[in-house]
Image 1 (tube, rainbow, N blue to C red):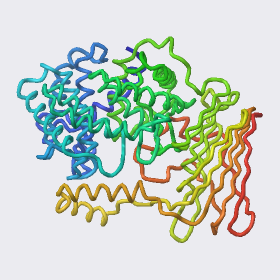
Image 2 (cartoon, rainbow, N blue to C red; image 1 turned 135 degrees about the vertical axis):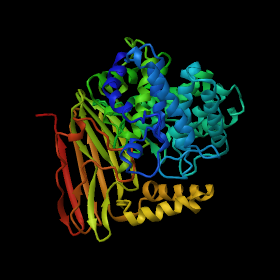
Image 3 (cartoon, helix red, strand yellow; image 1 turned 90 degrees about the vertical axis):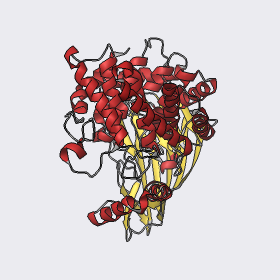
Image 4 (tube, one colour; image 1 turned 120 degrees about the vertical axis):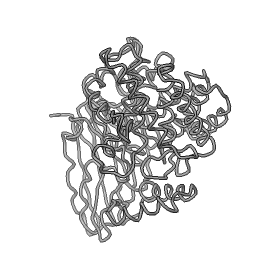
Length: 543
């Protein structure tokens, strides 16, 4: 048991418990969606908030829970109400909605099935017979839906891992092995898509360390329950990759990755720490960062991601063991350097400087001091044209060169149009009319989800302009970024901190990271018509 995780949760308990409708006479008794039941600003209760049932179950059953004895009965009633309300949100086919009515979301069905199942498992006989039987029946319906369906709009390993874990748990709770084949189908997809040489788990088009830490938790939980050696080997490779991206400031990944996330889910690493050295190194780093208030934790999350991370911290607290012998992270070694060509990522340390490059994200650059100070970050450029704004983080090609102690990265990146999609009242009316009528049909619900992901995430419409970026990280820690842009009409501007696609889980930051790097990105100079140039040197003096 590590108190650092409990210390991080304690200040959040009032806010998380206030999200629950505790009133027995309320028609929304047990809902954790405060925007719906209390503010009444939305038109349906989103099921993902019901993952808070696990927090109540943990508070009621853990000897380490910071609650008074007299609160136990209220917690029991609240947990039972949260599970009961979760059941009321389930469709007849076993699925749940996340973002809109009749979505039939794999993510919502998987995540809530796992956490409500874990709550039921923890509560045991604290639920009466009827409460438990009804909960198990709903978990079984959800598992049958997961077994008969899948995720069709992309490979998101954390969703697939949660589905596999929900199926594992449903089988454990109901005493059946009939969900094992479906569990294994999800696991096979994850392992097939895992990059064989570099170890990362796929999130859409590439590697995203933040979401990978989330996926690894569910995989570690399945491995704990089954003892699967193949899964343990996969987790070892994934940990070895992840260790390079536990950055000096406590973030895990960032704008240089496939989904732009930088949060940290530590439970899977804590569960693996005794068997996988790199997992121990990451877990020790997570504890140190959390104790300093650095990185993206539950305090930095909005309501949509708060319960998954709060729950993860509870699992981490339960799994944590002494880490006095944990090895250092690989980038902490003097002159460390590692390139991941398939992911388009590079990490290097020179003296007290640590560099990460996201070459397939248009050459995103981040430079820290080894103590965590963010010295410089560069997400490329944006340019305005007749069709709106475009960013240099479009389709990219890259080349890594490692000569002596110098790392060189060459990037060629197309400009791509930035999406500016927002729901206006007329659009919302059309959207809701569709989802509430013909959009109820499962096939049309699946089509709508694929269309939305294609428009908001996957498709990056090409715009005029190409960025050629030349990055050199020298032996003494000097960073040189040289850019040449061609094919644009107006002067491109530094993009600042940019994630150029829809991703609700990006853009979280702690209070220090939110203010950005110490050095601002300088402007370009015009070379000739349609061509611009910039050469910027971050020296080792004065910083």
